Structure formats: structure tokens, C-alpha cells
Amino acid sequence: MSALAHTGGSSGGGDDLKEPPKRGRWVPYALLAPGMIWLVVFFLIPMLVQGGTSLQTGGLEKGYEFSWHWATYADAFEQYYPQFLRSFGYAAAATVLCLVIGYPLAYAIAFKAGRWRGVWLVLVIAPFFTSFLVRTLAWKTILADNGVVVDVLNKLHFTDVTALLGLTEGDRVLATPLAVICGLTYNFLPFMVLPLYASLERIDGRLHEAAGDLYADPRTTFRKVTFPLSLPGVVSGTLLTFIPASGDYVNAAWLGSPDTGMAGNVIQTQFLRVLDYPTAAALSFILMLAIVLMVSAYIRKAGTEELV
Amino acid sequence: MTRWLRNHVITLFGILALAYMTLPNIVVLVFSFNNPNGKFNYTWNEFSLDAWKDPFGVAGIKDSLITSLEIAFLSTLIATALGTAIAFALGRYRFRGRGFTNTLLFLPMSMPEVVMGASLGTLFLNMRINFGFWTILIAHVMFCLSFVVVAVKARVLGMDPKLEEAAQDLYASPTQTFLRVTLPIAAPGIGAGALLAFSLSFDDFVITNFNSGDTVTFPMFVWGAAQRGTPPQINVIGSAMFFIAVAVVIVGQVRTNRKAKRPAS
Image (cartoon, rainbow over all chains, first blue to last red; front, side, top):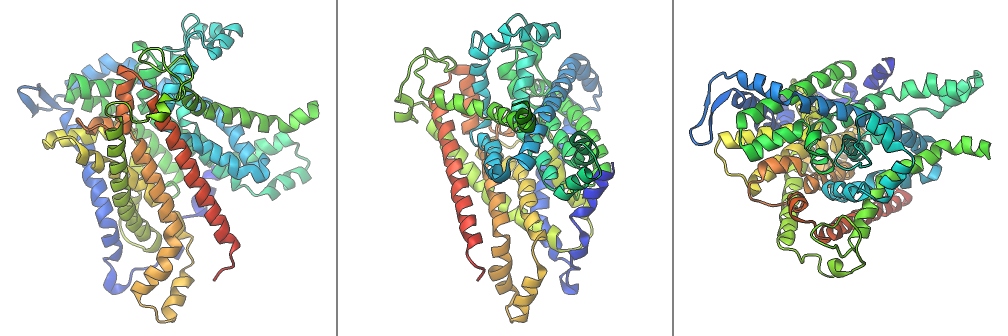
């Protein structure tokens, strides 16, 4: 992981920072205060309140009371663990696909696009300008039964293979796990491409020449020079894709079926439709805990200064 | 031929990836010209300009757009002000509590939206605050803040402190130095942060869904429409957003290019 250590030291240097003037020790705190108070009150405290709510019992009419009701967690987990498994499974599949699609794209932008680089980058970001809900709806059209895409996939027997893997059913793609994974991959691909591009673009071209001078063929150069130096981008791209994908519920709701519900779908339903707030809170708390564990493991490796 | 293919295989793959990313936008645009057969605009029926002639011809769509613009404008204003201040503190000063600050800024960017939305919604429920315009605004400022900090901080860290020292040497007061030197240098970062905040707020659905009550933003309208029926007007507005944003990017790019060519004054 020397590549991580490398970027950790390259920026965010504390050396240029100045000591606030003696009289003005409060200056940085005055600058921080309004924004940080906003985050504490509307981000940090809600997380804790949510922990409290998850331990309440009661109903809509009687009102809720705090009662250390741990059973909510056991019930929630027992009832909804398939959704959690699906969440992390679909998100992992989408992340791998994003990496497979996004790495060559980022590589092409960084090393092959030449003076068209700016145009390529705009093309990566531009689709974002249309509301993501509207774009996700478009996948309903693209993957529609008897549509061009599905016909071709059927002719190529692609759907037979995915059906064997349990990802599709019959000759449909819509309302199957494959459609959800495809939607997730599409929605979060830029989050993979941009950090990958940022770390590839930083690589000194002379390193490639040096590798060539030392008789490394292109494949070895990639394996021993380019890829290790792009690892920070791989790690942050993976996190930036996996985390939002595991919490998403729009793709599962629109492109999937009731059998493809993810954790986000359950939280949404419990909170907004069933109005069972303790269960919603417990589920969201479990999801948060899983994510925090993963992120903190990452922070310990890469340091926060680099990420913020 | 094979040699050419080997040299360009990555470029070709990249173009395919871009096509995958652009395909839905093309579908959205094409289907804005559809005259759907029935309530849902998912299959092609016949060409029609009706939706473009009357983009607000669906009950509620105009109000939702106005609400979204109002919230995006206000949350951009607040998040940019608060975020810029934080970025200056982080980019300029040594102080205790740096680690905590960085962690608190990083967490909202790394938390799934559904968790943030549900927990903030739980807070409002517990405090018996009614959901609506203001709760959406509070939520949007909360999740936009960190992104503004990231954009502005990069610019502040890249700033040459000698420029400010020079201004001071030339007897500029601290206020003058800030307004005439510091702020203009930081402006592109602040602008980028504001644009990011605006687009994040305007496009947010997940967090809004948990904190909106009866207030309908444009994404909430689309979510509802997906259950009731999707008029092509949704595609018209989606495509129009796309063209407006592309125009903003091109104008911005042309302006920075022109500035770069002009000799430094």
C-alpha cells in the first residue's frame, strides 16, 4: 500500500498553515462554527437520535416510548437480512462492473485522448445534468421486453447465461436483478471514473519511458508502474461507488421487482408507508454501522486529509 | 489492421463506455417528442411536438420546478457561505480539532443518502417539526456543505500567501486585502462549489423524500409520476436542464480560456 502513503504525503501539507495571530486565536473557530454547528445539529445528532428511536416501542396512536427494546434489531435483521445481502451483493457487483468499465475509460481519457481530453471529461459529466430519476426511468424503455436491447441479448443467448446465474428469468431483463445491477452500474459509473482519472492523470509520463528503457513491455509497465500508482483512485472510486449503491432504492424500485428489494427499499417503506419508525431507524442504523466500519478501515489506511 | 486495433482497443472501449453513459440521455430526448399511447411514456408511439409546445401542461409540474429552484437557490447560498468559511479555516490556520472537523466533513459524503434522510427525518419527527419547504432546505444545506468545502479548500491551499503579504506591504488594510486579493483568487473555487451545491440540491431525491411532507420538488414529482403515469413533459424538462447546463459549462470554459490568454495585469 505504498501508493496510498505516497498520495497521503503529497498534498494537504500542514507546513504552509499559519498559526492564528495571538489575539485572534478564535478566528479559525469563528470561521468553522456556523457550518460545523449545522453539521452537528442536522447530521451528527440525527444519527444518535436514530439510535434512540430504534430502541423505542409503541404505536402511532399511543406514541412511542424509549424502552431499550433491542428486540427490534433482532426482528429487523431476521426479517430483512435478504434485503441486506442483496444490497451488498448488488452494490458489489455494480462496483466491479464500474471498475471494469471505468478503468479503461479513465485510462483512455488520461493517456489516449490527447487534446480531446476536455471533451471526453465533459461527456463523462454531462449526462449528470439531466435529473437522475429521469435518466433512470429511461432504462425502463431501453430494457423493455421485446425492445432492441433485449432482443439482441436473447439472440446472443446472453439471457440464457444470466438466467443460469439466477440474474434473469426467461427472456426478460426488466424486473430482474440484472436490470437493477445494470442501473446501479450506470448511475454510479462517473463516481468511479473521476477518481480513477485523477490518479492516472497525476502519473509522470517519464515513468513510462523509464520502464520502456528498462525493457519492460507495455503489459509489464502497466502491471508494475501504472496500476500500482493508480491504486488510490481505485480505492476511492470503489468506496464512492459501493457506498451510495448499497443505499440506493430507486433502481431496485423501478427496474427490479418485489423480489429484488434492497435495504434502502425496506427503510423507505417502513419510514414513509408503514410508519414503523423504530424498525426504520434500526434498519438504517445497521446500514450506517456497516458502512462506518468499512469507511473507518479505509480512513486508517489513507488518512482523512486526502479525502476531504 | 490488427496492429491498429491493438493500439486503439482502449480508445474504442472508452468510446463504448461513453456511449453507455450517454444512451439514457438520448432516450430521454427522443421520448420528449413522443405522443405516448396511454399514461406511460415507455414505448414509442408517434412523433409529436406537443410536450415541447406546452412544457408545463401537466398539473403540478410547474410548481414543483419552482419549488426545486427556490430550494436549490437558497441552499446554494447558505451552503456556499458556510462552506467557504470552513474551507478558509482549514486551508489557512492551524487549530485544535482539525481531525474532528475533517471527519465530520467526510462522513456526510460517505454516508448512503437513505441513512442521512431517514435519520434527519427521525429527528424532525421526534421534535414534532412539520415537514415541508424548510425541512428540505435544512437537509440540502447539510449534504451540500462538505462538497463546497472540498471545492473551495483546493483553491485556498493552492493560493500563494506572498500575494497577500505583498498587498499588506503596499498598505492595504486586512479588509481591502481580503476583498481585493484573497476573494478574487478564491472565486473560481467558490463558484465551482456553488455550482456543485446547486446541481446536488436540484437533483436530490432520496434525502428529500424523507423530509418533504407534502411539498413537491421536481424529483418528487417524477417519483410520483412513475406510479401514476409519466407525461413526456418530464423528458422535455430533463432535456432542457441538460442543454442549459451544457451551455453554462461552455460559457464558463470560454471565459476561463479568454482570461488565460489575456496577459496578467
